[in-house]
Amino acid sequence: MVVLELTAFGIIGSVLLSFAFLPQCYQLLKTKSAKDISAYYVVILVGGSFCLTVYGYGIRDPIVFILNLYATLANSELLMLKLYYDRKNMPAISS
Image 1 (tube, rainbow, N blue to C red):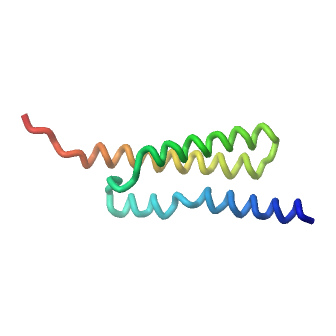
Image 2 (image 1 turned 90 degrees about the vertical axis):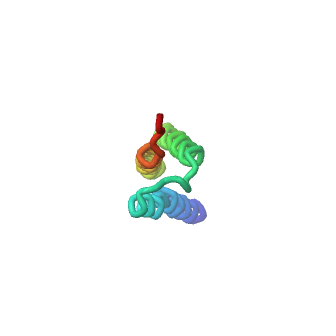
Image 3 (image 1 turned 120 degrees about the vertical axis):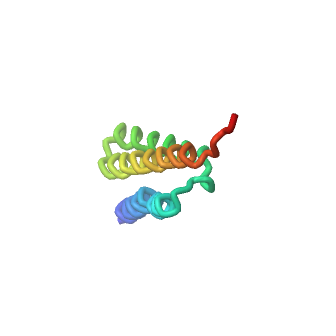
């Protein structure tokens, strides 16, 4: 019984973390600016979710694997948007 409850907590936590990027992506797309997002933060998110994806695969746990694979892809999208909008909104250098 305790294992089932812990599994439920694991699933809920993984789902929440996997979808945590949505409000940030929405705000980023709405404002077309990523100046308030730390690139280091997003890189750490991608790295952490990638490590958990490998872990989920290694322990043969489809829930951990799939949710963290989704989180890795979603956080990678956030990183790409960050890099795109930072470059797009960079002031032009006059010569």
